[in-house]
Image (cartoon, rainbow, N blue to C red; front, side):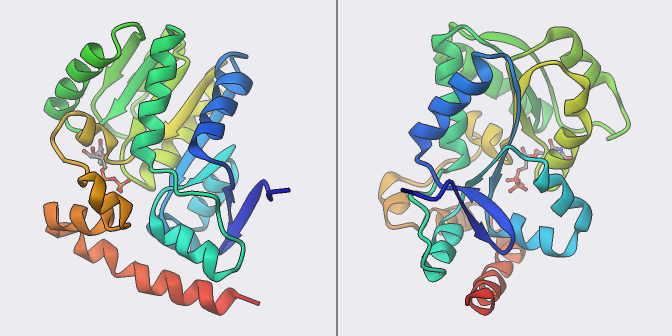
Length: 242
Ligand code: UDP
């Protein structure tokens, strides 16, 4: 039997295929109107949790932590506890939008720059015409500003996409989720930028050879600083083996 989760540097990653995760999220949470907190975690997130105890605590409140990023899958292989597959956050978000479209669920989007969000909303309406767009708000608001969560409380969406970048999006979800009765909350990082066509995903061939991260770096060279944690992450995984 497959292990339900695999620990990478004390972060429990769900060991399921993307399809199984989507199936569970629909049947156990969305359909049942239950709440869930989903984290799409890459090595940068795992490394952040090692030095930011508040973030580690936040992640401990997640219902699902999915392995977004080939680095996490490589780490699981090094530990000889291989994760079944990588679950790219963007693809998980797309699948959840498709499920919402199929079942006419209510979707709320928080995050990204106003003009990027507007474009993304236009694309969502075109691609998923049957889902009910409950509301949306750009991501440049103060953490103490209650406007967004009050709007979510009122609109009662089923799915809430939160694109505030890590660690802010996960901390925001943990702080605000207790205020609502239902809803699957997922931190989606830069996925709204991709949905808007503002940032492009790597061509499939790059994805297949696991170089999506490199393509992203070429598109946004300013991200190189963030990449330096990758070798540190692998070193920590090797050290923790045993
Ligand atoms: N963002 C936001 N509010 C902020 C900081 C970031 O809405 O205060 C948005 C930003 O515009 C982008 C996303 O959050 O759409 C973060 O994208 P990134 O690729 O940096 O994601 P990460 O890998 O940091 O999760």
